[in-house]
Amino acid sequence: MSTVIRNGTIVTADLSYKADVLVENGVIAEIGKGPAGDTELDATGCFVMPGGIDPHTHLEMPFMGTYSTDDFESGTRAALAGGTTMVVDFALPSPDQGLLDALQMWDNKSTRANCDYSFHMAITWWGERVFNEMETVVRERGINTFKHFMAYKGALMVNDDEMYASFQRLAELGGIALVHAENGDVVAELSAKLLAEGNTGPEAHAYSRPPQVEGEATNRAIMIADMAGVPLYVVHTSCEESHEAIRRARMQGKRVWGEPLIQHLTLDESEYLNPDWDHAARRVMSPPFRNKKHQDSLWAGLQSGSLSVVATDHCAFTTDQKRYGVGDFTKIPNGTGGLEDRMPMLWSQGVNTGRLTPNEFVAVTSTNIAKILNCYPKKGAVLVGADADLVVWDPEKEKTISAATQQSAIDYNVFEGQKVKGLPRFTLTRGHVAVHDGEMRTQEGHGKFVARDANGPVNRALSSWKELTAPRPVQRSGIPATGV
Ligand code: URP
Ligand code: ZN
Ligand code: ZN
Ligand code: ZN
Image (cartoon, protein in one colour):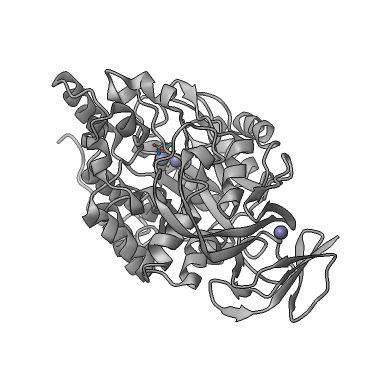
């Protein structure tokens, strides 16, 4: 069974050119003029791009007393509807749970995925068991990325000694350290003070997490990663303070990447001042939405290359779940959706405005991610032999985003009412046409796990500290006697 995508313009991170694409057995078999296939997809007027990769999702995740509502079925269906063909979710061990036990839970949940997926492992506590199991996770399970929460004190947060130990272990194993960079101690202090002063509403969530807590943690993580000699990937980079640290580190030759979210690029802090409690609470996430100065910084980072990837951090809670936090903003489950909207929103506000070229769009939604995560060119490429994870993108197709028509299982959409221009005509997941002229043809369980090897020595980070200041004792002639 073969499919040919006819009359489109192929757009990759490097090139745009007219050619047809023949897909056989789930992979790209031929790129050129006029190959024949059993079925034809008409891409006239469209761009044929690598499907989006969202490197940051939380599907059916136990968090803050509940579970995020989109699971691997509805979450990956939403992804495909918006042109995303692979998600990377976080396997999150509960306190004292082993890494491999947590992975087993994620293996079980992900059998329902409609598109391919991979996992990051979270380090939520530290001990010999974690140290030992990390090797199995990297070498036998194909997971080379490990997230550390510097926030969520008393729950997921790890301290600096634990983080440093884990970073050193990752440096040995050829892994990449991920960080949620917010100073959890300061957030806890600010939250307690705000509550004591009667600030109980969702706006106080934003007050409790100013850009400084993110900037401080980003700088700290960069320095600790440098001392360990491990590459560092900063998730949900939302502000200039954090971006500045990443930019500086990159200019110093440190291997550091930043990941802004589509929400932070396009929605701002005024959402929290909305008089409707539900409206504001639905937008509570960490870090919170920022002002225009920070948004401009993030866009500039994507344009200049100091920020590498656009993700969603899709972690969707219903309005009822958000209401756990009525009377105490610290109990509002943190997270927002975006899987279906990332590509159309970024195209509309990035490409249609002239901020990004179509090739840069492909880079930040797919190719850069595949390279960092070590699954390129299986993913993130339009090349013979690559998986046929493709989106046939119609730059003229328009819609108004609405919860009424979305795939996500929650009852609202943070982008409600936004007009987008640029949407998938077809989305293919390993050759299967999952979206066909707006009609959903997903297959539950079609998605397969994508294993990602550890980085070889060429991809590892140099440490500006470890290599250059190797400690050694000084030879001295006169050593004074003690206690005299
Ligand atoms: O608010 C957020 N971001 N929720 C999801 C968990 C996380 O911190 O990434
Ligand atoms: Zn996070
Ligand atoms: Zn997250
Ligand atoms: Zn058709």
